[in-house]
Image (tube, rainbow, N blue to C red; front, side):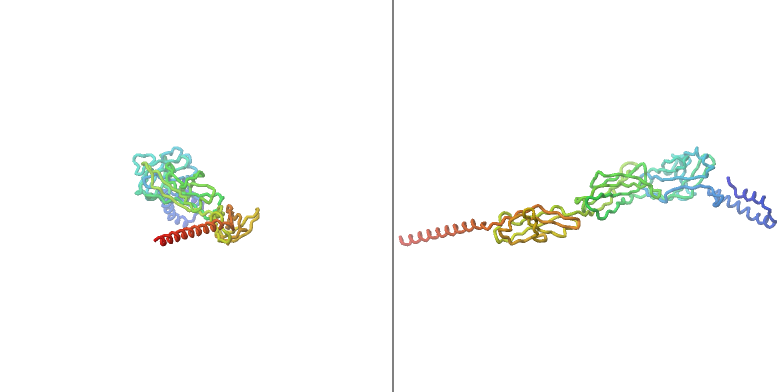
Length: 394
């Protein structure tokens, strides 16, 4: 083991020191001895050329769910000359709570006496100190420090700690924001959520359900993050539809946490659907009468222009614009009419609507009217004759 005191003495033996310099050594040597003892007590190697490579890699903080387990990703490094000395150190993991000198709350060598139950998931002989704490209570929220405590001389308190916070419920998942998307385009919605415990992964549910789902896990800032991805092709039916990602976490003693969810409404751009053209009046229309056509189509953005056409032997003749078309019709206006809906996303034409104009359509009504008048007059004459005969006989 490196000793600054011994090294300094060996150097002084080589150098030719003056009496004044030797007097200065009487002051410096105790100072070096004090520094050496300080480093030895705190298990920290001096910096510079005398540095020993000890270190630990931990996330800065971890969020856990109360009464569920918590996985702490952990790896450490040691000086090369100590590599062989940890090959029999598979149970040499200890966790302190609160500070570097805080109480031991977990000792892999004495599991039954631990304040916090758990297990070392990693292989300490391969410098993997990943640990899982079972049923982590909210009262356990604090900063934790790892100590390597082998049965031989290798014992070290690592100075970097991890803040573990146990919450009654975790924040809702993060759902990626999708702005406007065109019909026919592929949509990928990602729902991200923390995984406090690797052995009890959360359950993710998409609504409405869709077949294109996949899940991946990554480590981000030391915290395990699960990402569930929903993939589908956008259609007009998805417009203004709420899509939600719901998450529940299993608990150590059974059951699960309350559902937490994130929801997003989709904005899908699509061309006009097939327009619906209607003629307000049905059946034959008399000459000179006013008729009204109406046209409507669903689109996003909304239809910007409706155009009316008359179809004659495959040729379209424009008759007007707007949702409604009003015509004072004559017999030569008989034919097939249709409308076209246009928007920035495209255009679509309606099915044809037939208009029949008949100048003789009123003749039956006129005949009926004349017959009705003649009938009334006949009845009136008969009544008059009856009343007159009655008066003469009287």
